[in-house]
Picture 1 (cartoon, rainbow, N blue to C red):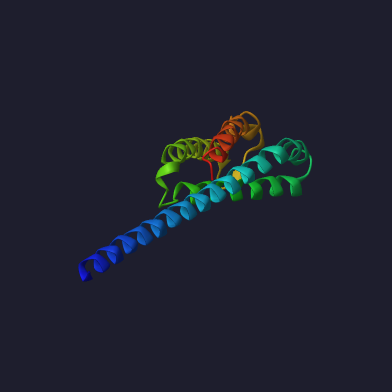
Picture 2 (spheres, helix red, strand yellow):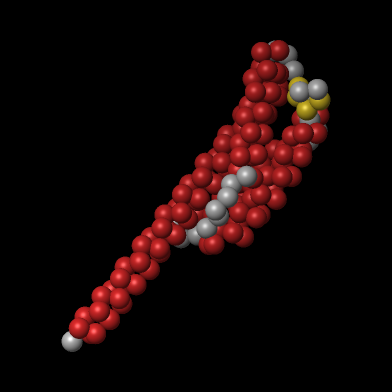
Length: 147
């Protein structure tokens, strides 16, 4: 009788630990999806504001500084996202794709910065906005992870 009780206790303990592990994995996945979604939305916001800012920056030095500040915020966000660790298994493939697009975007941003300042004609001729559009396309796949 004692062996049965111990065996039941072990089985129940194992099931409980498995359930906790599963819940932690789900929570980690939800946290990652939220983080990645926020990052993509921040990139999208920049892409939506950039065309108007570019026009205004050509005529107004304050707007040029605003554009530069926003671009550097985007750059910092990209670097932070690329450095993300502990990616849930369910999101590994999407994360790798996002990192590749973010690295491409980071390289494009670095090409439009000269001596710490954004060169307007370089940013207008860059692929930054179209790369952000490509990143936006990943958002729907991220949301489909079922979390």
